[in-house]
Every structure is written in structure tokens, then in C-alpha cells.
Length: 235
Image 1 (cartoon, rainbow, N blue to C red):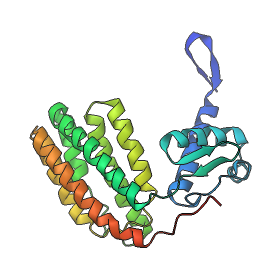
Image 2 (image 1 turned 120 degrees about the horizontal axis):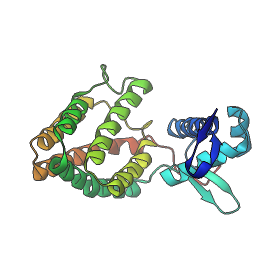
Image 3 (image 1 turned 60 degrees about the vertical axis):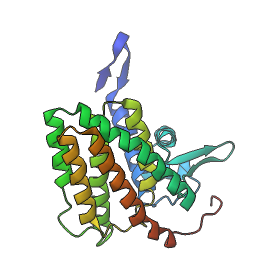
Image 4 (image 1 turned 60 degrees about the horizontal axis):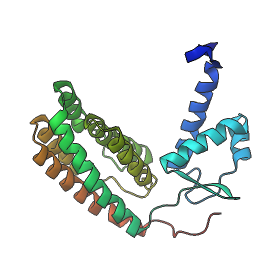
């Protein structure tokens, strides 16, 4: 089966599916720390494990580099991105406060009725169990949180703003194994306040609600730094 491209070019559709599958698989390995932070990536070993040639693995790693999840060093190949230091974590949240506060304001100003309903629905979503009770529930909670923030960035209507926010979230999600989500109810209430301000079309209130949420989230995450392994050179 083939895909017809502009100007008569033809390329196998299966190839596109394979590349995407390999990308998503390796991304999952990085996020779950099956490929631990700050570790060299063996392309040939990954290709054997996934039963593919090295080419789609290299293509996936190039995409993951743009996502901020791996790094390429001259003569050394790829390494997974190390966990953030406390100072880098603070910088990340300072950037989130700026960017996501702006995104919330733009979403409040630009959201259609359908968008407002979507944001309210995402704000009210829960994982159905107490988040933090086991990794799977924690991961489910993290996914809901990411979806909510991404939807607001999308509704804000700026591709560049959304891409910047997504990149910041990638760095944060590397830490999710260490960040307990025991206070999921607090997050839900904060999301509902953001959604309410966007629904009312109030940019100032949306910005304030988002900044309050991120400030509280930063404080909830800080104790996790006591659990993290010390950073070291790539293995």
C-alpha cells in the first residue's frame, strides 16, 4: 500500500506508521525510565529489541531531541536527558508561570463555546481512584493533567506558545516517577477554577487562577527532590 504525495511522489504508508510507532515506543521508554535519565542510548541494541532497522530508531531520536527528551553530543551519540536540578526545576516553573499564565488569558479571550465546554470537561475529569496509589494511577493522573494544560495552550491560538509549553512539560514529565500525586483533589479544584475563569471569558481571572495553580503545584513537587538519585555523568 502506498501514499500519494504532492507532485507525484510516492512513499510507503507502512513506513510512516513504523516511524511513528518507534518514536512513541522509545518516548514511552524514556518517560517510564526504562531508558534511565542521563544514560547513553545504544541505537543498535534498541533496534534489535524493537525488531527494526537502526534508521527509524535514529529518526525517532532526532524527534525526541527536538522534544527535549534526549541530547546528541559530538562523537558520543545520544543520551537521555538528565533529571532537572532544583535550580532548573525552579526555572522551569518560572517559565510556566509566564507562558501558561499568558495561554490562560488568551484562551479566556479566544475560546469558543465548544472550547469552553471541552476545558470544563477536562477540568472535572478524574482517574476514578486516589491518584498516587501506585505508578499506573499516578501516570493516569499525570496524563489528565497534561491533557488539560495542552488543551488550554491549543485554545490560546498560538502555535509557538503551545510548542514552548509542550517542551517544558516534557522536562517535567521525566520526573513523574518521583512526584507523588497524592493531592490530586487539590489539582482538580485548581483546574476547575481555571476553567471557570476561561468559561466566563475573563483573561485576568484566568491568568490569576493559572498562576495560583502552578505556584501550588511547585510546592507540592518540591519534596520529591529528596527521593531523586544524584546526577552524574552519562553511563
